[in-house]
Length: 218
Image 1 (cartoon, rainbow, N blue to C red):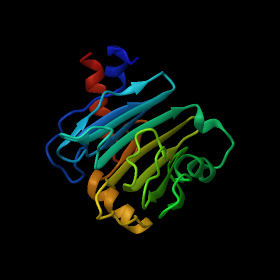
Image 2 (cartoon, rainbow, N blue to C red):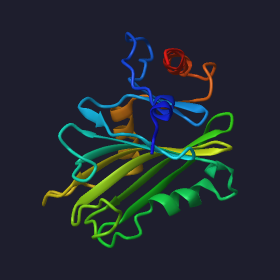
Image 3 (tube, helix red, strand yellow):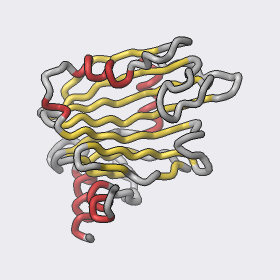
Image 4 (cartoon, rainbow, N blue to C red):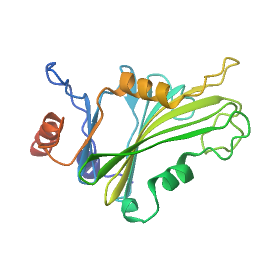
């Protein structure tokens, strides 16, 4: 169970500073030595974070929805120690996000891996299913269509993901993302996503300052 002290350590949701040339993200989450900063869309509500000291999970759903009946879902995850394994990022991503249980309209795309800063690398992943089968994952909605656009980060120690998902249980199905449409959706939804180790990295000064201020206030 997540204790109050670990929750405070692992999560800070703070109001953005006044607009600048590069707006400060409205959501800042410390994750195992780094700090994730992004803009959470209006109307999303944070669910209680879960952490066992090695794995971190936090979900955000639109107000009035739940982690069972969501139509849109934002998920942050981190897996400490998983970045040390010799397995290639493309293989890790495929094992984690390729929807093998999907038999109707299965989509999986890996957009390659680029170096962000130092040891930190980033990949874009697209996955989806035209009609979810029962048991596709624990909270799958049978028959719903789903599409996911995922930012996958890796450094020498940890794996991190920021996932935006849409799901439609209705007759009108969501069209699958392409790599191009996923990139556009992630930018429009989250703005300039940063996963920062220190304030000297590009775009990280305000994110680290927000996290430091939160820590000082504990």
